[in-house]
Each structure stands twice: as structure tokens, then as C-alpha cells.
Length: 127
Length: 123
Length: 359
Image 1: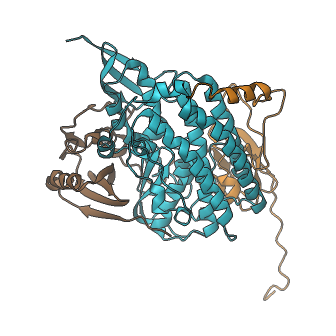
Image 2: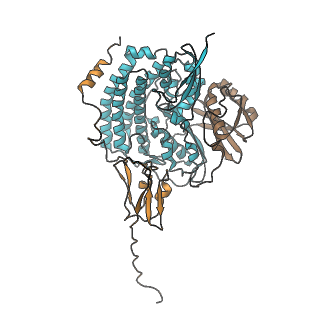
Image 3: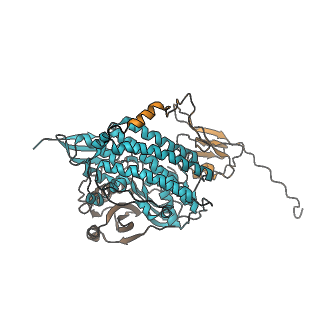
């Protein structure tokens, strides 16, 4: 007969510690791989705009004239597609989740990358 | 790589009911009905049937004006797919057992999948 | 003749995790007919395929469902790989299998919790979800996401799991198995639970087959269909037996899911024992040209992804037929003739996932 099947589990639950954590006082669980938000390093970005093309939610915009890179955190689905495809490795995944906000906005970053000067050719012909 | 067996048999709209009835008698199970837009005012409808993990697809090609017969007489559960097809593509299906008349999936644009979007265009 | 009244059930109802609306036609307390309506959360994912490159659509396909997300992504990838004739490395196949089975564990535990909640057993609900949390932790440690894993890609997987981690996961599953034994014991042997689920929402084998019931809904009625037997990913190299039951009531569907939990644990441990070393992805060039109906077994049943490409980066059509859509006709048949008080239990017993259904 199945009358007190739950007793064992119930007693165990009473004796053990809570399975939950007191979140704002104790930090949330995180691992090294946790996809929190996309971080950007403007000093390495070569403005190739591959991240713009590869973003499935079209959250990223790159303006070559104004030299800005912007991301809409509310559109971003944190799939890390841009991080994987970035050729200059200026994008990386941070484990911190984006905080709540009262209104929608975009985050704008300046591109500070300076193209290294090409070494001049040594022997120029006919001069 | 293991290939899942499947075959596609194109048939006429007129022969649909007969072929579906034959499937039902042979003990096939209805796996899905799906519609694809294949050009201006041309739609491909796949009726997929499964038996022992082999998929058999009956394919009819119709225009938006063609009225296609409902297969809910043979497969009672087909009404979900037929209503969906009507609501998203605007295919006219005649004689569904539970006809929602366009209210199964309510969309802001009428027949959203029936219109073509230029490829690669930004939203 | 008694007077008929119509009672609306949903879209917002305490037992429903997602919005579905049912108009219940009642005679006294007995349900005589049901008219379902969906369409509250249609998102048009299938249309989005025309605007996203096929390699990025994986992330979109994965977000079709918030519970069985990994299997959606995998099925889409397998479909595209079939069209493009890509041979995926063996290690990637095994990793896909491991993550799929973890998805099944997490989905079934979630469902067991919701099911307990549907007949008012809150304590059991929390216990099921406590175990589920351990599964989600493994997901976060290995993929970086708790419910949206995002590790599948065309041509393989994006992340590898170190062999030491795999061994740790395997031994962890032994302790999870013990906890699940205690949990399922309550579901299967407790009198109160049996009283609420036995002979409720009976679906005959004949009905189940012809109405297109799939997954545990069908298997609970004796329809032996499990797409894992077709051997996609690494399932062909692993041993497992299909779980079926013949009664066709809510208890049977619960029984099938409870037993599947153990077969999933077994499958993961087998896969971890057999996983070979090697690369996890191959390079993909070109674009798909052709069509394919790719099928996989989700926790809820058979999933069909129809993919059609025309040789460009943008697919022509991706049609996703999710298991719940196929189970709705069966649900209607089950509800006809039941008592009003049993409606929540029966609706929950097919494991409805409505966001999935509408895509």
C-alpha cells in the first residue's frame, strides 16, 4: 500500500539545508563558461563589421564614419555568435548578467584602434 | 551518417483524397502537413505519413485560389495543420471538421507567410 | 436533456505554464466537447529564416522552445548537414547525444513537478525541481547556458567537454539516480497520486495512433514510436529499450516519463563510456541546396524540421512541427467525457508546450 511514500523525502527535506540561496546577499551561481554579456575592446576592433552580419538578433551596429560600435542589450540574445566569429578577438563573453534598467537604451563604444603604419618598401623601382 | 528514409511523391490535387485514404488503409500515421511558398502564387503542400520510421510525403502544388479538400475525414487530427495552413498561407481548405475560419492563429498581418520578403532586407 | 454550458479554460490558468485556451462544453460536471484555440504567442520563427543566414538560424531555431531547446538546434543542424552531405565527427555526435539526454532529464523533471502541481501536491513539485536544478548546473558548467545551450552548430558542436568533466558528470548521475528513485516512487506508488491519475483521460491505442499522438502521450497508450531508434546522432551505437505502457491514462503517461528518466541516465553513462577522442567540428563551405525532413525525438515526442534551401545563404523554408501540435487532437479526445475537476490533470498529462507549438 502506498500511504507514506512521501515521508522519507519530506523528512529529508526538513533536516537538510535549503536548496535556494538568498540571492542579492549571496552571489548567484556562475561558472567560467556562463554567458553573461558581450564585452568589447575598442582598441583592437578593426571595423570589419562581421559581428553585425553574424548577429541573429541584429543587436549590433557599427558606424565606420563616426568610429562607434553600439550594442542594444535588449535585443541581444547572448548567443556569443559574434564572439566566435570576431577575427581580431576584440569581443569576449563576460560572466556578469546585464542588470535591469528602467528604459531601453543602447550602449555606444568608441573605436580607438589605430592601424599600424605599413613598413615602407625598401627598394622602390626606377627612382 | 545515418540517413532517415523518406520519399516524395508528387500527385494531383484531384487524387489527394484517394491517395490519403490508401495511406490510412495501409496503416500510415499522419506525421505533419506543411506548406511552402515556391513562387508567386504557387504553394507546395507536403502531407507526410510515417510507418515504421519511413516517411512518405505526398506533394501537391496549388495556387492561393485553389480550394483543396480536407483530409479530416480520414485523419481526424489533421484539422490543426489545415487551420494553420489557412491562417498563415491563405490556402482555402474545404470541409474541415473543426473550421476556425481564420482564428486558429491570429496574426496582425493577414496570411503572413503568403507574402514574399526581399532576401537580406533589414527588418 | 441537461442544459449545456460553456466554461472557458485558460489562457491564464494556475496549472498552465503557457497560454492555451479551451472552451469546455459541459453537461453538469461532465465535459462533452472541447474547442481549443491557440495563437497567443505566435512569433513567426518560420518566416525569420528568410532573413537570417542558415548558420545563424541555429540560434533562432534553438529559441523555439525554452525547455527542449538543444534538441531543436540539433535537429535543424542535422537537417542542414544531411542536405549538404556533411559528416560530423564522432565526438560531436556523442556530445550531442549527451546534451540531448540531459535535456530530456531536465524536461521530464520539470514536467513531473508541474504534474504534481496540477493535482495540488506542491511539496512533490518542489522536490522534482530541486533535482532538476542539478541538471541545469551541469548545463551551465558545460555549455554556459542554463536552458538555452547554444552549443550546436552546423558541422559539429561549439564546445568540448573535457574527459575529466565527463567522468565527474557520470558519477554525479549515480547520486541523481538515487534521488530520482525516491521521487518517482512517490509518483508511482502513492495512493493519493494514483487516485488522481488512474483511469483519467484514457486514450486507446487505436485513437492514439490515428490522431498522431507522439512521444510519451503515444507510448503511454502503447504506440511504440521512438525516433531515437532511427539512430541519429550517436543513438545507433547505444543500447536502450523503448518504454511503453498499455493503459493509456494519465498514470501511464507519468509512468513512461518516470522510466525514461532512468533510460536517459543510462544512455548518458553509456555515451560517456564510449565517447572517442577527436575533433568536434568540421569546416562548412557552401550553402544548402535541396530539402530534407529531419526528425528527432524530443522529450515530448517526435519533432519534424522541414528544411528547404536553394543554394543561397538564406533558406527558403524551415517548417517546424512540434510534438504538442500533434498531441492537441489526442488531448481533445481525452477530454471528451471526463469530469471538470480532472481537466487540469489531463491537459498537463500531454506535457503541453504552447510556445513551441506556435513558433
